[in-house]
Length: 75
Image 1 (tube, one colour):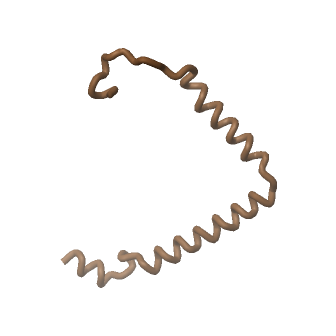
Image 2 (tube, rainbow, N blue to C red):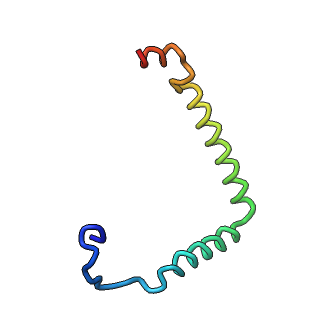
């Protein structure tokens, strides 16, 4: 409605619209920093495993690696 009817009066507005997202980021950052070290280590391990799977899958199934398939698609 803001684009189709930009001049109508709005019934409600969010108070402190610039402070709410900033405080949410700050509180989430505080909660993340309070996590134990084992949580961070397991996060790093699963992230590494996921990245390895992602790149191995991409390397195997990439059409850009196979020049013959790429040439067939172009012609």
